[in-house]
Length: 79
Image (tube, rainbow, N blue to C red):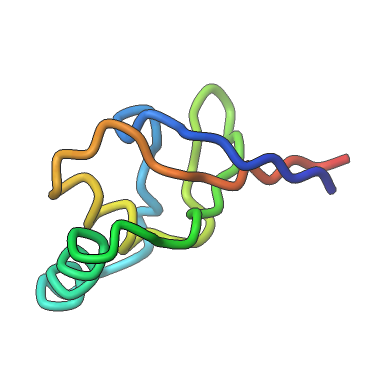
């Protein structure tokens, strides 16, 4: 399995539709990112012609709400 961390445009990533996120939880993460500016990269993979979130749905949603254009993402690929 290969791994590659990159800055990816938020709009190019598709959410994991199985995840339900409480608004309060997203707001807490949003506040943490805004105040510290540091966060773990989300984990994504290629699924057909799009990028799908494997881990980090709440961080992605928080970054999206903050109006960030890019997000740090670890791209997981099968070797």
